[in-house]
Figure 1 (tube, one colour):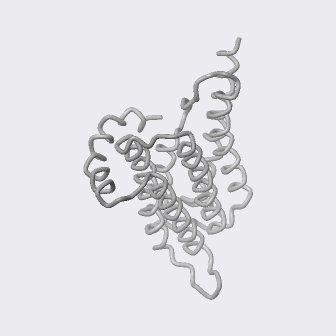
Figure 2 (cartoon, rainbow, N blue to C red):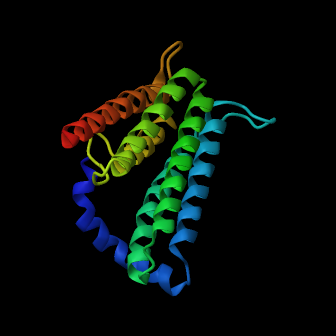
Length: 209
């Protein structure tokens, strides 16, 4: 989880955006919903980048648009928490909404990648790995432990990888029969997702002993 180590620097960079959002009258919940909209738009862009749909031609340049939207989703995901702290509106309800929105965002992004590349089995393996990672992180609380964030790859790292690889996919085409950047991205998400889930599972077991 390399990017989590940069949280102090990120918080400082966020400060002017938090101030602007607060002055504009935005709420943390509103920012969370906007982040979900970015993820949905990115998923659609990824789908259209790889496969023609409803008369629209596939356009690999949309992978770059999707990458920009993914980075926007990640930025907004940081902003909603910082805005809640600024406004003193931290709440269990807001935390629940944030987690639900994040999981739907993960599903939309991976579904778009799978649909656009036609790699549905890899997409299934990737999305289950990501969801199990999140589940193990929060399930720790249900058994009396602190929420677990550790593991190979956290959400911030995952979004950075998705955005970077899909930007590359806008200019690098897969060879005939090859996985290409998006296929390998799904492999990566599947492997590190399940590996991170297993790491969190054993961490919880060790803490309960």
